[in-house]
Every structure is written in C-alpha cells, then in structure tokens.
Amino acid sequence: METQTELQALQNAANATNIEGIKVHEYLMDDKRKTIKKYFVNVPNNGTISPNLDYEQMNHFLIGMIKAIKLTSK
Image 1 (cartoon, rainbow, N blue to C red):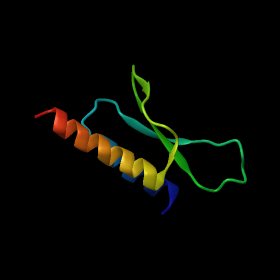
Image 2 (spheres, one colour; image 1 turned 45 degrees about the vertical axis):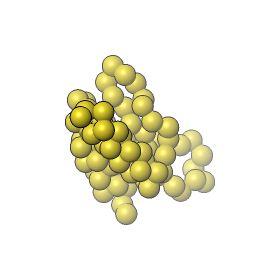
Image 3 (cartoon, rainbow, N blue to C red; image 1 turned 135 degrees about the vertical axis):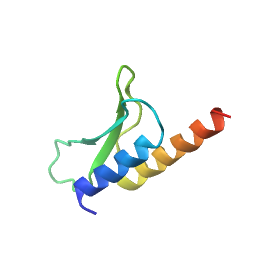
C-alpha cells in the first residue's frame, strides 16, 4: 500500500472515533535503513495518544479505540 493511501486509511479510521481534531501523522525516522513506515496519533490539547506503530498495528490500535468508545458511551 502506498504511504499516502495508508495515511488516508488510518485517518479515516481515526475520524470514526468522533474525537474532535484527532490526526494521524507519519513518524519520520532518522535511520534511513529502516523501510517500514510508522505512524502516531495526536489529539490537540492532549498530545500524542499512541506509540509509534506500523500500519497494521496502528489499524488495530484505532479499531480498539473505536470499540472502547462505543463500550463506554452506552
């Protein structure tokens, strides 16, 4: 999957949390030998709310957030 497509897919999942201003960013690594892209989630006025994760792990993180929000909003 192309990076921009991955980033857009993750942002769409983040938007499903309905958290105002939530944004997925690509983590820029200093080590150019590493080829796996990593991402993190940031919420304005709350800072970074996730570790740096690859696409699949971040997708699982966001799905978990969506489920947790649904469970706590009942």
